[in-house]
Length: 246
Image (tube, rainbow, N blue to C red; front, side):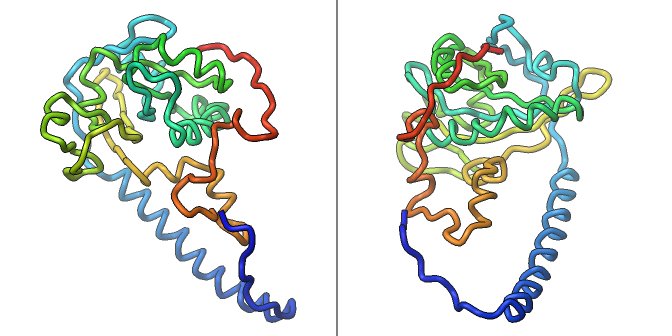
């Protein structure tokens, strides 16, 4: 993180306004392009999900259909927490800090948002309570869900020393990867996979970055998230109140 920045030219308010209006035009162009990109995303073809997946939650065993919780749209965040881990990935935790706010509103607009990890459900309950999170977090342990959506390496991947991730073969020792997947359920109960994004495709979910992008120093990173800590590990962190495990 850089403490000092070389600031741009200092000008009069009138000159600043000219520059700001010119930049505003580019911002509007970007907004319109983003709207177009979002429309194209919604128009992508779907894949029918025929395999039955079983998850473990605080309610016991649940199917993928159950996870919709009576809604037609489901957003799954693939949270990196493998069997045997004592705490989750720092980056996934940073992103997950942004879930509880949207979850005050998403259920009222036909969307369920939750996290799925490969570790057995009981193994991440202490970490969830430590973080004070309220969002639903389920385990895919024992199912093919993480493998089918390419966020965990299979035994064959580990043996081969490569893994299909972010829509291409990744060389090197395979490991857990972050991602987000979206599903739709129609009135007949059919489920469709509509979208998945990986790696920096999840940046849009990190609203802290959107705030930082407004500031003079921006994200101010030497490497992605090198400054970030689990929110209870900052020097001025306050103890998190115990949270219910939903």
